[in-house]
Amino acid sequence: MKKKLFTTVAAVLLFGTAAVHGAPAAAKREMTAAERLAAVRLTAAAVPGKALADWMTAGAFNRWRDTFGPLVKSDGTSPFMTDFFAHALLLSGPQSGQSGVSALYNPLQDNLLIFQTDNVERIPRVEDFVFTTGSRFRGEARKEAKDVEAIAPVKGDLDAVLLKNTAAVIAKFRKCFPAGAKQISLASCRRFSDPEGVCGNAALRLSLLRRFVKPEAKPDALKAGEIALLLWKGERKALENYFTFPAGDTAPAGIYAALPDRVKRGMFPVLYFRNKKQEVLFGFASRVLPEALILIQIPASGKPFFVYLPLSEKFVAAAK
Figure 1 (tube, rainbow, N blue to C red):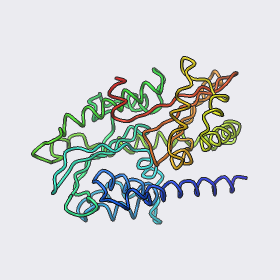
Figure 2: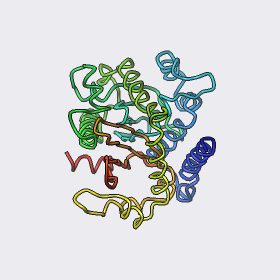
Figure 3: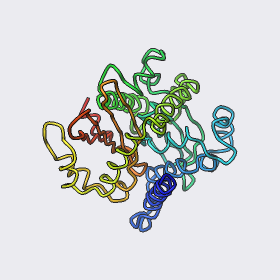
Figure 4: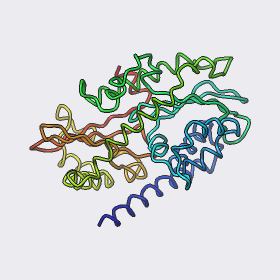
């Protein structure tokens, strides 16, 4: 059963990646820089070691390897890098025909990769980067408790924390790199570089995820599998019957059901929390569309609670 599940997971992820790369629309017209970077993000999530070596200039990759090389295994895999790229939101900053600034922000790790690209080549190559924590970039005091609160909040609801952090990161990025900026450089952001904090955030998140595969979590894992099947099919009526919704409004079921099949078939658990009240919180996301996050709360009794949380720039700006 376990082997079959792993095979299914791998197949769905492969389908999702192939669907994006092989989209008919992309074959009929020239891809935009943002679309190219989105494709690179997916590749980096699948094979981080090789993808980063291909994506970065020699100088940038040497600096990356000197700092983060130990996190990549000899076969090119890296749980930290895969998790980061799989669930990172792409922010596109000022661009010219020669150069551009973009960023990848993973709200689940609360880590932010800001990078400058050489836009002359068909696939914009990274020639400079700054990797930092969301808390440092937002200007919060560097305290371990702050980092923990961003990833596993105990003082606020997870959806509110994710929205607040994402909105603040996007707003700061737009302030640092306004559209139409004449000078494109990462010089003003070098002070934010925080490799130690980035690794700490990633390690904390992965340690939380590992609880999901422990023997005592088996009942929760089975429940997550049951929910995943519903999300993969994505039928509105089935979702409405299985879940309860905020304010009793089932509109989120319709919004989710309308997502492309390749997104729904890539929905897997990406968050897992259990509290002393015997309540469980799952987060489901697809690497094909990481800004679409589904939060499922399992109460001690009664129906699971469904929250559709779009972490798109437009939504988080309006929800601040």
